[in-house]
Image (tube, rainbow, N blue to C red):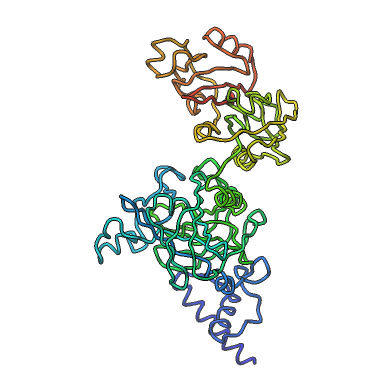
Length: 513
């Protein structure tokens, strides 16, 4: 036994020297563990490296989950009516902003050393003909009779949808319903026999650091399994009004769209839908729609082919630390009402501009982006119980929700940002209306200049913005504006209501230190 240990020690040191020459550092314990596993095939007596220890004490094997789940994961290809479909995933590309708009492949090297996947194949096989079926994405079965969940961007513009099962059987599918706002779609095939299906879990039970597995058809490579952890929850990537994504480092690439994200029980906890990438490939940042959000959408799509959402009738913005201070809040939570739609549900219930909604039907509103989702999930016509802060005092209000239309959705949220002193204003006039292109009938004063080297120079208030209120006091002229500013005195924070375009937004202006 001692001789064996000596040999192992010698091998370990020899390997360590080799690795050091290559610029790699590793502990003796890790090397012994590696030698035992890969050299003898037997587990080492020493404790494995910390990286090998998972939440349950050991690194999990996902082979059983993959075997059970794979038969229910399908490949989806479509034929477009006109333009060639775009291959793959909704993407968020680094330039010009971390989460800039617009899907589609961006510049930069691809997985084949400088060219993307399509370019690699184009060099050898030429351009595919127009209107030819091409592998677009993935989906998964949720019933034995052929209902399949996928992404709207996979099947939304398709003239023909072909579903290929894991056993290579192919069926033509029809769209039962789709929802562009959440990028979800429900399609249906008519199988010749009962099919495997995936159980739906609870995304709300996920914790950051939990193991998850993704199955799909990246780059058209069928039945690919990747694994990673939950990197974050509740991610907002400006993909739509109801952003609440699970972020994972499980490899997600073009073609994974619509595939399942599974927990260690083999339950679906998310639908893979977007990647954050500079060149179109995986860099360890993928996003999935939480299954808790998808369940109610899919139920509606199955029942009536469309989604109806509750409507509150307010424009909201986030509560920044400066705004929280100006409203007398201990911490920046809730959704600040920037505008109330005339004769809408909120208006009829008595909700006012400047109210901060902190609770909706018993659920705490920690951030403004949470409120639209809570409202949307509430059935049209139901009464919602709201808790809000008005002038520093808590109030309870009951609101009967209306139905959200596409036109109303455009004004459902309006983000604000902090500004500061150091601006010049002028009365509204025909000349000013022409100069800044606003409606002459609007009320307030127009910002004409931002002083250089002042706190306002770095703010988001811009020339052409119209100031409607100063600390809740309406202003319709420069004189009224100056009086309101004088009344603010030596306050450290000033609150302005500013109209930009068709939306009004609160700005908390804070004096420089």
